[in-house]
Image 1 (cartoon, rainbow, N blue to C red):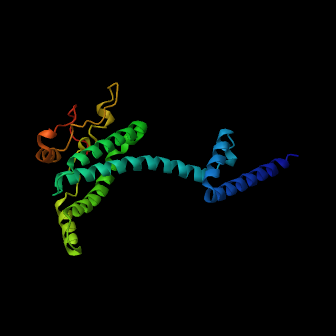
Image 2: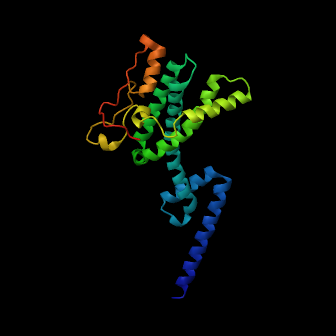
Image 3: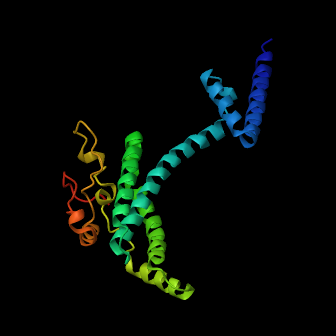
Length: 229
């Protein structure tokens, strides 16, 4: 009878492998049903029924999607800041300002819901700037209204030379507050975006165009801890 134990173990391993294979096929053919099946297996603690490889991949994907959302909002703010500072056309600053306020709030919400991402702010900002600079060039070309393909190419090269390679904006000026948790860890509440915080060059442009209707004074976030690049 002692020899039956290895047989049972082999049979159990074979059944688990067959179940994993079936779950793998379901993952490719019917993702929704796969999620329900895997959730049920986890609830009943049936570890042999869990499609571990795909479960791990999906969990990692969820984390990346949260990071991508923050980076996307940050990129949108950067594009609008570049347009506000450099676009030769007038009449859009008030609208762009309102859009930036919305994206800043979404950035803050993402970090508040996912505080662990704050340890990757430098990396996420670098990616947002890379994409924002690229898209900002295209928007600046578009707003200039070039006539013809040759003029468009020339403008694109000109903006590519003019815009800095490194992000000219501190994270505080993009987010509207300093999200670095090391500098407000003793506070009872997490700071929120401040509509009065803008890069100096953008504040000057807003004052020039909007004048007394919307006076803007550039100032750093209230704690004045310096830029978080």
